[in-house]
Length: 186
Image (cartoon, rainbow, N blue to C red; front, side):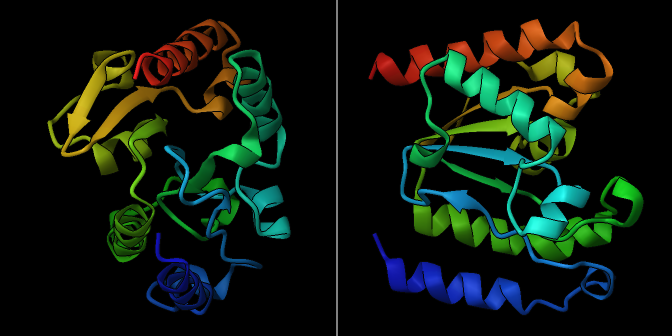
């Protein structure tokens, strides 16, 4: 564990001006929880509440996620939660390829320092950033255990998608339960 290296990376990220999002953000949302935990959750990008508070998944989608985590035996402060993009795209737009390209090295560095054994990828943008094989939709890859070097990745729908389509909640719950069983089995 290199806490000094982690703090240096966070300091770098908080001052990042690599893309135009630095002009419209209120806060860089670096992540929260224990960066040296075995389980990480990686989402897409901060929303307005996250931008306001500087923390990931603290809005409606975060409340929903907290419920799924608690139901499946996880405590939010015992894992690490971050996003592919560290700044909020205006109007919660999808991150552009340029924004993802500029921000991805920060996520890569976070993963390199924190060394999680398990990652729950929340939504399409997180899946695209982490899963090396091509896919057309989350349906094709969700609910599978994808081995990436030393990390086991499970892809599921983003909690914001559940807010729009509550039927997806059962699937997200299943995928988080699968992650819980995977971790318990080792």
